[in-house]
Amino acid sequence: MTNSPNLDSQNALGKLPRSNKYRRFLRIIASISTFGGLLFGYDTGVINGALPLMAQPGQLNLNALAEGLVASSLLLGAAFGAVFSGKLADKFGRKRVIKYLAIVFLLTTIGCSLAPDAGMMITFRFLLGIAVGGASVTVPTYLAEVAPAEQRSRIVTQNELMIVSGQLLAYVFNAIIAAYAGGASYVWRYMLVMATIPAVLLWLGMMIVPESPRWYASQGMLKNALNVLRRIRRHQRAHLELIEIKKSVDKEKQTIQATFRDLRIPWIRRIVFLGIGIAVVQQITGVNSIMYYGTHILEQSGFQTEVAMIANIANGIISVVAVLFGMWLLGRTNHRPMLVTGLIGTTSVLLMIGVASLTLQGTPALPYVILSLTVTFLAFQQGAIAPVTWLMLSEIFPLKLRGIGMGVTVFCLWITNFLIGLVFPVLLDWIGLSTTFFIFFLFGIIALFFVWNYLPETNGRSLEELERYFRSAGRGRIGKPKAEPSDSPAR
Image 1 (cartoon, one colour):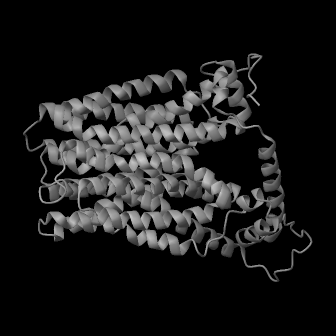
Image 2 (image 1 turned 90 degrees about the vertical axis):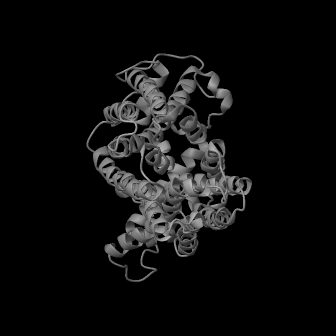
Image 3 (image 1 turned 120 degrees about the vertical axis):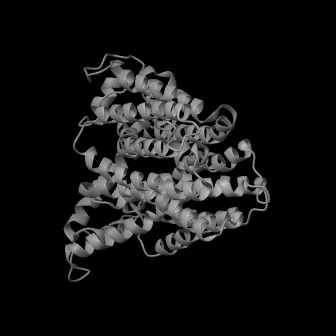
């Protein structure tokens, strides 16, 4: 049964709280829900220090391929979690899905911490990845739907900040636990189990935050939507925003969504392939080889394991600082040159890592040079490439393409991430540090070529302008559309 809001009952709740109370409640909502991002970051970052210890004889006794499977199985699970969580959140609500994800985080973290062998570890890491992928989609969606329009960008990007903060937290805990363990290799279990704390906090916190008002409106529960808006907006604005939400929901219901059959239409195929390209570009820079195997890379360059874990904290710190800078920079520059600059920086650093590891092999300077270069790499990656990637993916898809477009591109992003996580330790063991990074350098050149030749500027362009650009199959400046007689999605 549809509930209708009573638009004449503005004083029904009595005296309204001051606006700072609304802002305070929004901060609480954002802080609680982004524990999902913190868990995302911690669970992807903790393997950085735990993997060298669990690989040792007497623990899980992992070879290079098994190391790759342990690290990357989470990413394969994340690909499926990202794809299916959106539909679950549409059906059951954002809040309920995040609560369920917190339970999955908790149980699978315990499973990983107690895993007796590599097979069980890979299985639980895959299941943990489903929660990571689900959080990567559901948490930003929830934040975007509860945030006021003028604060949406800042609040949603807070999740990205929490992800890199979770990775930094993992690096710090890895270093502390390893330092106080006296060389005991079993302490990787303590490193993993620490993630149960934010999982419990996320589950408890989601008990007190409201459901998304937009989800309530999409289900026809307008009274519930209005009640939530009254808790997070000024009273008069709540009514006006509900009217806008209802218009948006009605428009989406009337929009015929594109399907896979519509990929036969040139401009639709073009824009989906471009989305896939943007997603793949972010990953083939090799960023997650450093985020997941940073300790291993520093070991290969000459640091002892405990020292490598401490040094790896620098990678986490620069990631947090760079994300903050990237959030500031996004509103002040165009997106395409920002992405190009980031790719030039990362590609140059990849070449320097390859050259340094080849020419300085065996010298005392090598580990310090590699550390400084990985820090520089992450400054370009997290400060320019990562924030632009997600923003451009949210900008290029017209409404009728958003479902299939985001689903396919996010899946491809995670699968590329999985493949790199799987093969990196194998390449490191097979061809060495320098040749591996020369390969990533070549990937960086390909990424630069793709962005320079095929990626349009999206900043300041409406969805309609971008749609006309892709219909026209033009390059560079967005121009007038060329007629395509069969460019409407199949019904």
